[in-house]
Image (tube, rainbow, N blue to C red):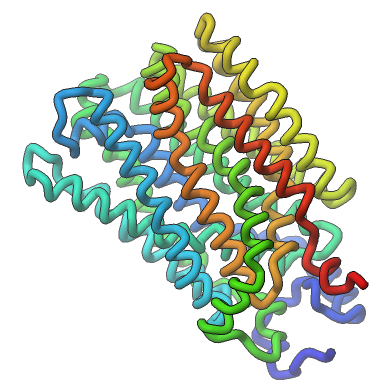
Length: 450
């Protein structure tokens, strides 16, 4: 079917899955610089989202002390982690409401809206006075900020992933989409680097009382630059060339019909979110509160994890373009099932900086191997008409589980007395990912099957 002529001038000439052969050959000659610019424009907001989430996780102890009334340090930490996780509960709502908006109105407008909502939530967290100053209003405002961030994040990652998949050529879709996850690693590195610098120049008491706000303030200061970058985004040709776009109720009906696909996507992403939060947001609290290592060492390990993922994700994303998504997904999940708990047990038996670094980097490689294929595969199993909504809903529902990983791990350790429980929790998530991988298949193969 030929695309409407009137749309050709307003959309970028990127290769898309629905383009006819003559358009594919033309778009395959698109300058790499143009593609690189588009990738940077779209992943910048995704980086801010993950940066804010990481900072909250890194400074959960300080946030708990500032905003929550309790004399028990463990209770304060768990309240802060519960607030951290509460943001994930808003993601499914954001996925459906904002996701349907993106599928109806366009990828570009949706990406700008989500950035504005995320920035507002960050500003609330940065400026809210402590419990000692305004009482119960303090944790209420912090919770509101996290819920707003979660509502925005419900579709931010989905919009970014779908946009990248729609501007990528078929032969390098895995490589291009992997930059969504790579941008998150850059956020982890930035947040960890800020933390390492702060622990080096500020006394621990100052960080706990007011210094933890500095990383949030940095996030607020870079928002104007991110708006400038996203303002110049072009709409994807896959969206503009479509003859019609579903309304909200049509999207809901399609989601209902595709419940099996959404369920498999949910199981697939549980492995992604659980492994990610085990090796990033939970590491500083785990390193200091459980392993009794210094905050500096724990943040340094997290920084190394981010660097490892930053380089491994594009490599494994490109590899998935050549050997197939499922081979990488099955390999990664089997490695996690077989090694997550044993390596964690080895670590907690005699904790040290080098052992924590070794275990975290091994788990980081498994995460990169899995996620390098998982994100792009999720864009391929969801029908195009609801691609943003379906992707975002599956991802958000899974994040409601995986996002509580820091709280779940803390609770499991507290209830069992076994400090290696994060490894067992990761192995369970890997089983979910393996089952989903074995059952799922790309949407195009489903519609063309006899």
